[in-house]
Image (tube, rainbow, N blue to C red):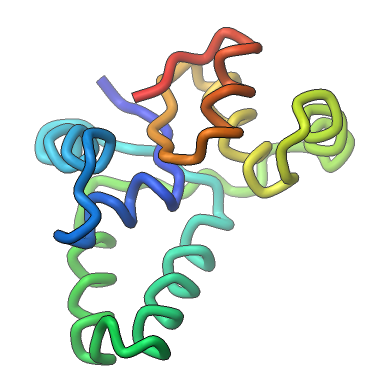
Length: 133
């Protein structure tokens, strides 16, 4: 079944030394399911890879390879479907960032589970009835 994938879960799946329960579940799911992401996801992924390169955790070639592998998965970006007012409202009510609210709203709108390693986002999702991977 498709799911909404946030950057924290994708990164946990991508980095071998971070593969916790959520990362392993995401890797398994991406082998047979598709994932949906808000358009901000790509910028978050590139930024995380850039930070890994700058911290000498990953080479630039390694970052490119990792990004290519992630992008080859069945991941579909949903164009900015949310109105800014809805992002503001959900972020304010739940205490999460507007960026995280974009993942939560996408999961709500599509009626899908949310894959995240972010505890605040998981808590907010639980409060509004969104199941998390």
